[in-house]
Image (cartoon, rainbow, N blue to C red; front, top):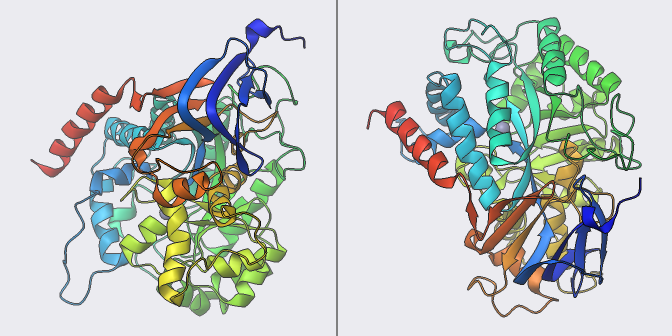
Length: 494
Ligand SMILES: [Zn+2]
């Protein structure tokens, strides 16, 4: 294909983050298929981004968009004994039970708007609301999943709809009526619905065409360089067994096997709470990670979300399988889950992605810095995730930023993550005069951004070559916020 220059769009900021550092006088050149063609000094007819630094879009690998409705409504003591993840979960369930399809759309659009405004360009939505409140199926069993996808499309984000399998309340646990909307009792029904969703989204699997990617042999993936490769990759599916608690082993094996055949991403909550680990040992005589490993369910397409309560041996199992971790520190600190042992994961070469999960905050750079800060508080040291062999003072920041970009893209199989020829034109800019980062030199700018950036410094957000946030505002911002305020009023009788 011969592209004339009229098909190219060129963006010229003061600084571009590529190949691990900021460069000045470089322009980002993209084709009309929203793919980066080159990053170089030729900048004819460029769109100027004066006073701004341009970075690859952040990838949010774990979200439950509807949980945005309970923000600020669970921060008080309810139990005489103690409040915990489990008491919070009951409150979350009571909100989940009341949402109509339109409410799911409005709540999701609010969460995705906030993501866009903070520099996020793709999201992995761990979606488990499937049925009507009484547990009966909608005419379209993917109605609610499609409402979430519609919300992402209307905001302009890419979305991996990680469709959740949820079969039971737990091992030898009575059914919880608050989980009726989640349950698909047999794997056949679940797989049929995933299949249908994939084809309704226009593609049964994920879009990555990165060379060497575990996803590169996907049926229907468009060959490298074809126009529309990226713009048609706005929504795709993945397999998401909720947890070892909610999905029994036979079911789990069957759906992970299909994910293997279809080369789909597999996401699963693993070892978020000690009670989940002890119940797994009681049922199977093995910890969750040991169960997954011995049953051959770990792979480089597998992402375990949280992985907090794990032994060094489990960390090695994940490393040997090239499996990934998705940490969600802002949620984990809010729920009192514990600290993800990222130092152990990094030591073994395990890739770590990040998620905003419950949306108590939507600020993926806060999640990135918390990876390091939680360990500082625990160990009473600084720069825990740094290395004495690091070259340059931004090496630690680069490692954390990588979690929020490259690893996130690998985890959910998104086409962005880095600014290189052949990758998607998904990026954001920050205002170099914002008080939170003003005065940084190119060498310490990444550390300033990772450790100190205020979200208000985000100016432009571009997804698939399309500017969805301009000068810090989204075109539908007022309408999305008004609709969400009305939803909150309705839900909470205010
Ligand atoms: Zn989660």
